[in-house]
Image (cartoon, rainbow, N blue to C red; front, side, top):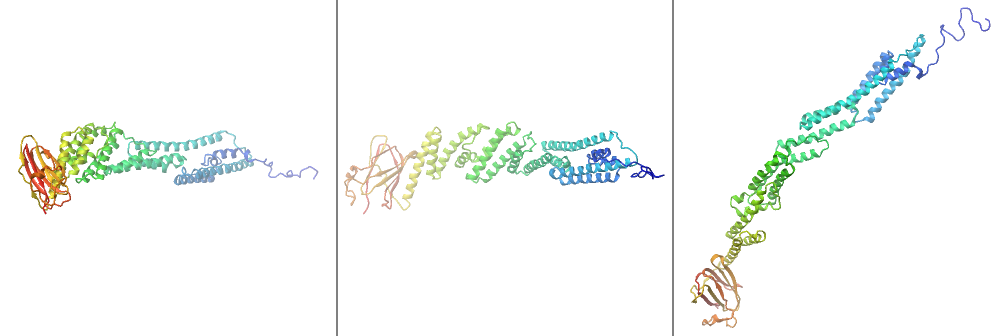
Length: 511
């Protein structure tokens, strides 16, 4: 064979099949590869569909759907650092694989002597699919936002059953929104609505104290939406105050204890709170009447004329403001001193003279202009009662009568009493007369007398230490006794003393 020649019927060296060898094809020089990679960015295997590779298209669609379903179930929005990289890696794998699959597709075309298509439609489709995927994700997110707004609207109406269903739907159905904020707001809405629903349940069960706590927690919650447009919370406060008043009345058993006082005061403060903080609600208009009913209930002893109990009951409301019902403040200003004065007289009648004097001191210090003359009478009767009680104790073991006839009579409008202590020990003279006039006078021992024997004549009446007492005429109960009780039988009598009379005598100790 001549040099450079070709054997007959043969082919040039290095050539087979009658075709020239394929030129080298780079990975990014493959038109079909680039198109398949871009189409696979959609995540649904559109590049494989373009290459007519049904197997890989089916695998891609199946895996993508499985990943999305799993992400939705396991909470993609709550674990972005897990699911976003996972989905991106899967899309990246399909893109890279699309490059290789497209190059292989182009090589097969070239091997058949065909040229890969240069039409721009696949590129436009790839862009449209990418846009569709972005719009789909944004659509899922916005659908979740819309569903959240619907739930918030039900929440704002106070329909928490509907609202919670909506919030739960957002949390479970819109994980593919990839929005952690959406999930957090849905869960926060559930928490707030549970507080509101608990408060509503407490109201239905008449557990008003718990209801107010729940309402307080609800309104402090960042996702509270319900607005108390009809004054429901104010009504709960009214019901709670009424419940407190009833409880306090049931606790009262004739004595104002600390618990009774605290409960009544809390009820009054709750009513006042409604008037001040819910002034634009219908409940606020009910406060003056409610406060009047509360005061009548708390001071029922005043109407029952149990004056000492009424005085203590009215005192429960010391230092409280009555701006919402000023007429109650006026009643307190009138009724408390009235109850105190009448209580003082009851104390005198029952022998509680210390209590009566304390009541009088209170009136003199707090209400100096209230029935000042009667308060003075009260003090005098309390003192007289104490003196009479002392007399009663002194005669328990017996008594001796004092001479009731006057020593002498004469002019003047007073009664003169001149008693001489013919002993060497002090004696005390007690008396109670008309209109509770009373007193206690110490009769000093005689100055110059022989106490070892009775006086023999009336000269003892001239003793310098003789008691000289002037009284208004009237009936007097008198008692004479030794201060150290050496008399076993004190001198005691009731004498009707007339003006101008003088009562005189020498008292001595029998040997």
